[in-house]
Structures are given as structure tokens and as C-alpha cells.
Amino acid sequence: MKKVMIVATGGTIAGTGKAGKTIAYRAGEITVDEIISSTPIIKNIAEIETCQLMNVDSNEINTQMWIELANKINEIVKDDSIDGIVVTHGTDTLDETAYFLTLTLNTDKPVIMTGAMRPATATSADGPFNLYQAISLAVSPQAMNQGVMCLFSNTIYSGRDIQKVSNYKIDAFDHKNFGCLGYMQDEEVYFFTTSFKKHTIHSLFSKLPLTALPLVAIAYFYAGASASILYHLAKDHQGIVLVGSGSGNYNHEWMMAIHDLSQKGIIFVRSSRISRGIVFDDEIFDPYHDCIPANTLSPQKARVLLMLALSQTVDKKHIRIIFDEY
Ligand code: SIN
Image (cartoon, rainbow, N blue to C red; front, top):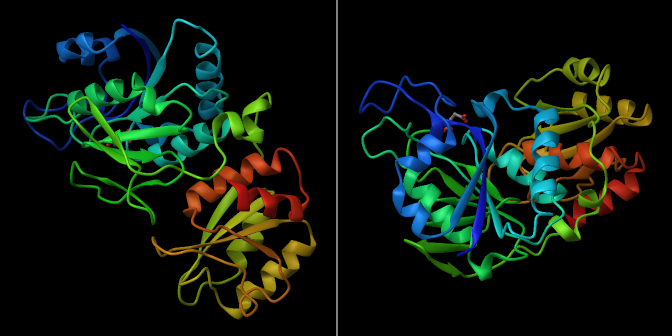
């Protein structure tokens, strides 16, 4: 039987509230061992070891905790007896952690993230089934060298492209543009596509010691937005991800401020507040080529990549290549 290590971080999958109810609960209350004991079928799929690394609502997770998690998993995968890893995590910021791990884990072993939309105490809690499928995926030979993946409601997503699209339904995730990687039916795995972007063992960032990340902020554009927010953020951030309208657009005031701050060394990435589509270079909104386009990355994922890129270089040409490759 294969062996899976579950690294638990908290979230609604470990949440408790009023018996049977789905609202007004606290995330990160019960241990991963308690979750497993409510799902005995898991023991038929794999030998399980657990590591309760933290037990928090994922809104409490910060960059230092990402580093702690990545370093822990990079240590665990060195153990030849471990065949795969499952990370339990809150759904609110799972997309950010998933992309961070995609870029920083130095392993071709399956690493599967999962969680739940309903707390463990709810009627029809979704956590146990997601965990059972995540473990099944983690022992599948098909999951080797696919990068970090996420499993929710019978559906396999990539760590790069997963995003939360519902704050209400248990089928709460989607890929920004590309559907999903595959599906599951109970423990059966069906892949239909793969991610062509660099990940895990192919990622530059998975070979580096991780200690701290440079500060990068996100600035959201709206009708009539003043550029003062950009000047304010530039005081203590090395990079700013712009969340523009449409194709990553903004007004003339922002355009001039971006040019000014860019000449002072701030690195800008242009993303969009529209959840689907792609942001390319744009002669009209970025006539001085001050910004790097986020391509298909969401603003929060573009921030993850910009932080890692800035930890290696401040050369905009090099960062642009990184954004094309990852
Ligand atoms: C959290 O992200 O920790 C709370 C919400 C959830 O897990 O669904």
C-alpha cells in the first residue's frame, strides 16, 4: 500500500459550528486526525501519516507561513517511503498557496491540495469526500510530475490556474480560462489535459533556499481612481500589481504615475479585474512599456510570481521572461 502524508493547515474542512448548520462556524478548530477518524474508508486507499503544521483560517496565512509550508513539504518528500502529499487548507486563499507551492516545491511526487466549503459539523459536510479523493489522486501514478494540483467535488485543478468562483456552493472552484485538468469518480482518476507552464522540479524557484519575500502590493482600479494610492503603496513596496479594468486598463492619471514610479524603480505588473481573458502588452495604456503583463494570472497569483521574481532579480526584462514562462 502507498503512503501519503497529510499536511494540515486548517480551514473550513477543520471547522466546527452548530450541529448540522453550514454558516456561523469557525475554521481551523479540529485536528486532521479527527477528520480522518470520521472517514474510515481513507485507510483502504493508502497508509496515512499526518503533520498538523498549523490550524488556522486561511485568511490568517501570510508569506512566512507559505515559506514554512513549502520548506516542510520539501523536507517530507525527501523521505523515500512517502509516495504523495495532501495539503488540507481553507478555500479562501487556497489559490494563492497553491500557486506558491507550484513554484517552490522541488518534487515530482503528487502534491494535492483540498479543503471544504462546509464545516465538519455540517449536514453533508464536503470535506471527508474531498479528502478521500485527494488521497486517491495522491497515490495515482498519473499524478506524478503534474505540479501541485487541487481536488474539489470530483474535479482536478492545477495549482497555477485554480480560482475560487463561488463563496456559497460546494462546487466552488474553476480554472480562470481552461476548464480543469480532469475529473474523478470516487477513487478513479481521469486526466484530460496538463499544464504547460513551468512548475515544481522545472521551476527556478524550487531550487532556492526560501527565507523571506520582497513586499508586493495590489492596486485595484475603479472609475475616477486617484493615483495617490500608487504613490502611497510605492513608499514601502518593491512591486505593484495593477488590477485594471477590461484588458488591464486605467485612466491617464494612473498612466502618468506608473511611468513616474517605474522610472524610480517600482516594478509594475498589469492584470485585470475581469476574471476571464488575458492581459497582453498594450501600446495605448502602457505607451512607455513600464508594465509586465500578467497574461492569464489573477492579480493575487501575479503578486505571488512577482514576489518570487523580485527575490531573484530587479531586471524588468528578466521578470518579463519569468512571467511568460510561469
Ligand atoms: C478559510 O479559508 O479558512 C475559511 C473558508 C473555507 O475554508 O472555506
